[in-house]
Length: 108
Image (tube, rainbow, N blue to C red):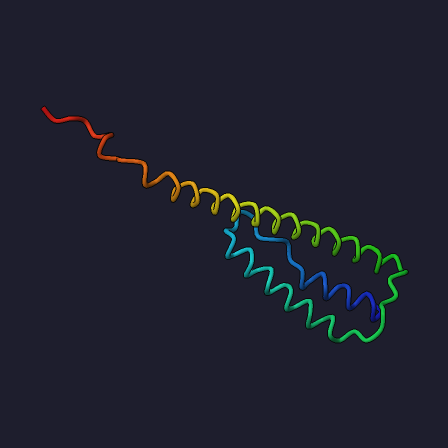
């Protein structure tokens, strides 16, 4: 394996698939770990990599696919946090107006 393909293989290894059905905190922790591992690999690279070999192009394809999956997972996490914030805002806004005592059955 040449130097560029070795680096690309290490980047691919440092970029696992996003965890399925993970909560936002778990997803962010996994992303941060992957980001740190990738940064360590990239710190070793001084010049642009030659990715012209078929092996390097295949690794780049897999790396791009994983990066796309991470972008989708992080975008979904952002939407989940937004939805939670909207829900909290609604609860704060309408919660004081709800009088749950009125919902109890009257006692006779």
